Image 1 (cartoon, rainbow, N blue to C red):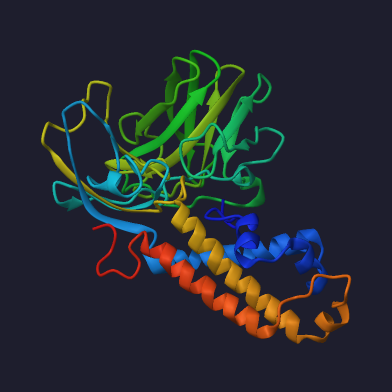
Image 2 (image 1 turned 90 degrees about the horizontal axis):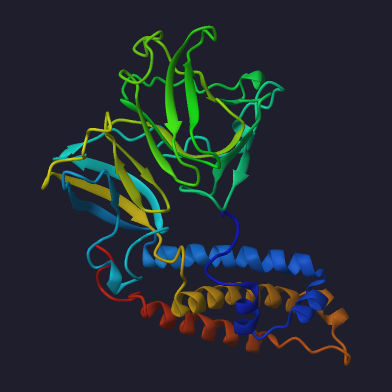
Length: 376
């Protein structure tokens, strides 16, 4: 998740710097937690520097996919991907930028990251409705899914929290589908979805049946054909919606969006083509569509060279910090025969230069310093 280093660890930085944590604590007048927070900040800056030098996230422009007349879900991943990070970009996709069907660029889903209900705190908290929990294990997109525990007394959930005067307030007339992925712990659960405008007494309604428990379903509700038509979205904005179940159960919902012909799951790396009914079989054999997306190749597995470069660059910042300490009066007050003496200023500068040279050597293993870029 954002704010937590992923390319290298605190231990990696200490190993590269040659400092012990106790030395940093004593000379910087910090406790254990403060030193950890300091190093994590350096690591995040180091990761940002590595991404800048290697142009990450990588952009894959207009990746070609061909319909086969059967599939509606496609994996993203350039043909030469195995040369760089493995078989595919599964769990590495950062965002999908554009999608072209037969050279015609399609509308981006709402929201653009295709993950509409991404925080439990955005859902209604009033006594009438169930507030979901953020689920970070059973998920399909982004950091987590929404986990609802519906009861007989509370069979509904509402998004967003209109009791706090928060509304969606978006026009959805330009879209054809409401899309989401859903999973239940109970067989034969009927979902009822209600879309509301400013008038909370009228709504457009659709239902979906979850046949089997433990299975993720792709739900594609056509806004004209699957919903009742009490509200004309041409003249009204969507303000909020409700989800209701017909029995006590646990529901996981993820990847919810309003879309035209396509939706996607990031970082999982799936693109889904919408269909109006169960009789639709996907796009005809040979039908071309192109996807432009970005991905972080080190999101799942970090190569040794990237780990080394990140930890060395973070160690450089730690050396800078220790140089500042060395030049301060506090350092001289703490220095004594019972402590491990902090290296002199010249030694610290020399160590910093060595770390940067070795970091560049690590990055060259991934192509830094060569002409061109890694992915085209």
